[in-house]
Length: 187
Image (cartoon, rainbow, N blue to C red; front, side):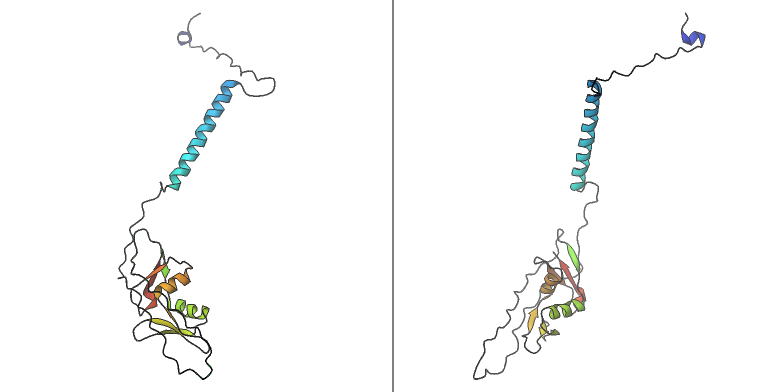
């Protein structure tokens, strides 16, 4: 018998027999080993992708935050205007505690920009605190002008940011202390 490359005739390939199944229907040991190997590779690959995504592996590094606005410290609130002399039967009244002046802070590369305030935020702050309407003193500090039965309430741009975004760590950078639409909130 001559080889197939000389005669041009191909011999049929030998019949492959499937490995015999165990009587209980389980896979043979060689196939079980391969299945475990493939499952392990899939698990390790999935874990690697999750870790990579968790570390921000597929995103560009965050851009540095720059601000063209000059940080302005919120002015210290002035005490409320003097009240008339007490009546013969004085009743105890509670005066509002002025908020602590916020320290000068500028946005750092790790700070998060929350948003820009509007004049409506100031009005809503005063309404929510039942403290009248928004007003500004001649020294450029802001306050809620008292109405009947309510004392005046001084506030700073930082107070509005903390109230607006419900974040006690928030602070404001005021481009122009007289214009609330230039007040940017960060945390």
